[in-house]
Length: 355
Ligand code: PMP
Image 1 (cartoon, rainbow, N blue to C red):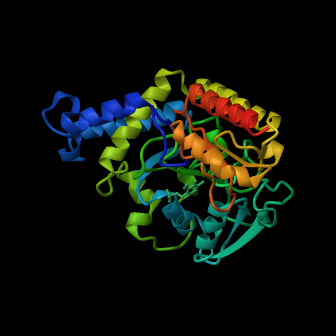
Image 2 (image 1 turned 30 degrees about the vertical axis):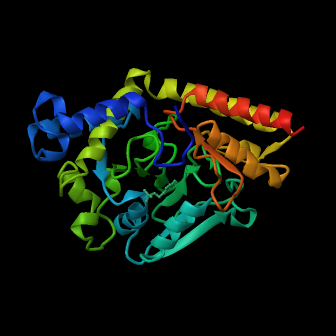
Image 3 (image 1 turned 90 degrees about the vertical axis):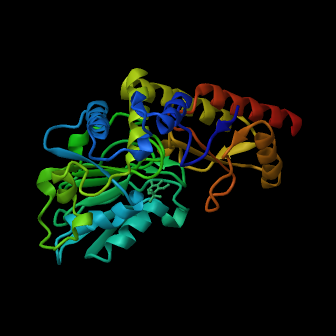
């Protein structure tokens, strides 16, 4: 058995993989594969309806919001957000807390004026900037709730005089959020929702249609909302596997239960990083992510041999992103406390050998 600490696409529950593989052979005893049925069939309509209902249920999405299943990943949202929300000759505000956040505002600059209210780039994004003012004359304020690469996370929605837009790609469905705080939330599915290929968008309907821009239909949230995410052929299989994963999450107790487990998992690993003399965390303490735990070794020369040891013992995906170095343990919903304990034991074993 492997312990998969990969950053994404990443671990999903093994029962989801089992059921997902079964549906490729014979979907719901229909004699057909999920891969060969029409997206307009009754069977797939039921899939997309249940997926939408589960997202609404798990995240308590209030009335007045559309839940959309799109393609193009979170990166497409970097462009779709300003296309749909930034008025011609208008302005939007962005927080630069990491590589993805900076990609988001650079893409938005193609559609209008962008004010970057604060940045932690000078400190290699080791913290989430807190001292800034959100301009009331901007159309929206964009931030990234979890910085997958740098291992920082912003748990509280900032107080804002304008609609909040949040990239939640790497922490959606891992903790409680108040959707009503947001104008728009987006997330590539391939962390806690499902496989790569589908992107979740939750958008407040009344913020749309105000740009004065003639938006190409495929990039227009209103077109997708009117068509119930069936404006064109949706990513049928990615939505189906997401449904299986959402059912798993619901059955285990929903967001409240997974958040409780995620807190324990993160605390267990950070405690070891702080206690073990060989390792040190890279993110500022109060901004530490519960999803991506970034750490290095005091003696960088030992990093190669620790990484080799993890791989030898079946712990995969722990190599840090090149912009941080060291290690990154991505500890998404489906990763169990057993995998965390296995990593902690190995850190202790390595420290004893290298004392
Ligand atoms: N935002 C965040 C926070 C991410 O972690 C990622 C991918 N890891 C992206 C955006 C880009 O997502 P995609 O590859 O789906 O375009």
